[in-house]
Length: 219
Length: 254
Image 1 (tube, each protein chain N blue to C red):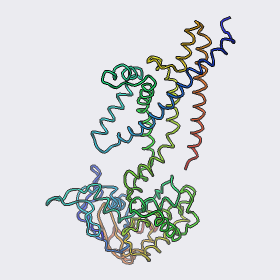
Image 2: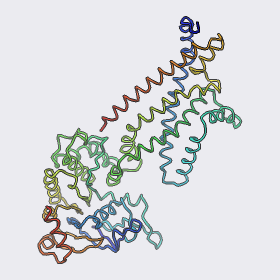
Image 3: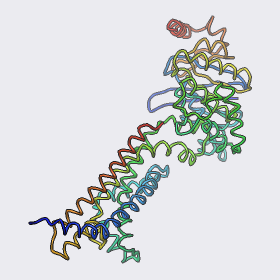
Image 4: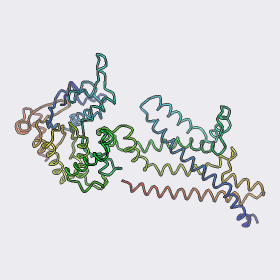
């Protein structure tokens, strides 16, 4: 018999205990970095100062056009040569956050452009300061609409965390692999890893769908 | 109060205004009429700095809106200068453009607090007063989307007045309204025009209203003023054939 239920139940708490928390933590922190940095990038991209917007554009294109794995290696193995050294988990959070911030920036851009031009004109007619126009008028209308799209990137991010295995971070996949290596039984631990990702991604997508419905009823 | 001197506005090759000169005296109610595409709305948008002149200058109460003096040359005014001058100008839009993420009260208090530096209490007192004026005291805590078009436009008018403007620009403010709501908004505007010192510049297709409230009516065609006269004169015995054509076309439809 290939499948052993006893071993399944034995391995489950180990994989969950060693890996689930890390996957959850890295995804959550990575998303926060991506959402905040993405907003900064989106605003810089719209800067009226030509140099700023061009450099931001180039940075976004560069990050989007290179693989996350290479960026991860760069941060973990190359940056220490320049005196920038972080732990594996921190590096993972930075890499995921940075990578996805460029996608988030595009999402914010679309959301900002979807705000009717009349809103800008009304703000001008009322002499609202520019910073205040962003904060009180434009972003409160743009952000709710893009939350579902941002949520989808978080779901992608969950599924990218196994990449962190390459720099020694034990996520769900890493924990499953470790467990399997120690017993030479692969079927159950790897299946567990798959199931855990399914549960995480699916519950996240339910959350996103709920958000979509909420946003649909806004305003 | 308002002085256009030799103003031209082009969008690419398309000439909207060319060599335009006119003045509006303080407290005057001036209505701009004419076929669509004749440049009326562009004039309001230039005053509100939503568009920039291609050439020429605009003065508001003696201050130049479009240019600043640097040494002995006039250079196009920067954002900061325009911000100063346009604080005295308010605008009501065809599409209302209320902020949908704010309640009615905050729509009215936001700019007075952030732009004029009023305290929240002062701004709210002013907002309540104005909502009372426009007959919407009971909608203080409503969201704009819960209001009818006519109500939204009344809020938009109150919002513009909350800035205590010297000049109020009305850009086809009833064109997006259901016909039954038009009269109420126009009556409100007439009240405001008669009881305040505000200078009005109004673009409208409501000829009855234009005749009723205006001190002067300017007839536009292809970016030029065809005729500049009192409403009685312009509507009953216009000097120009083009004005007659336009009026008969508009009045026939109405």
